[in-house]
Length: 74
Image 1 (cartoon, one colour):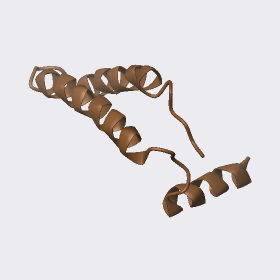
Image 2 (image 1 turned 120 degrees about the vertical axis):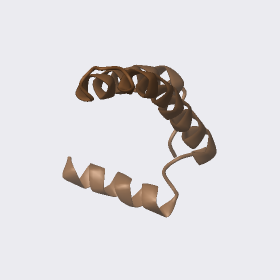
Image 3 (image 1 turned 180 degrees about the vertical axis):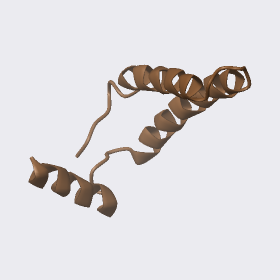
Image 4 (image 1 turned 135 degrees about the vertical axis):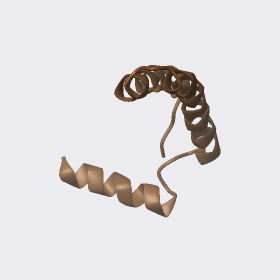
């Protein structure tokens, strides 16, 4: 299992893992931006900071499977 992860990490760093890295970066930044728009208003409330971080992380994590459902690797 460790060998598979290490091999994937080496291919990613060489730029040979993703078929369309621009599409992957676009969708990842889209989910991060939406999570940021959820985080900022919640962080300005009187809630402890761990609650807005948890909620925005759940929003971003739940969007990723839908955004990356057609994700292809080489």
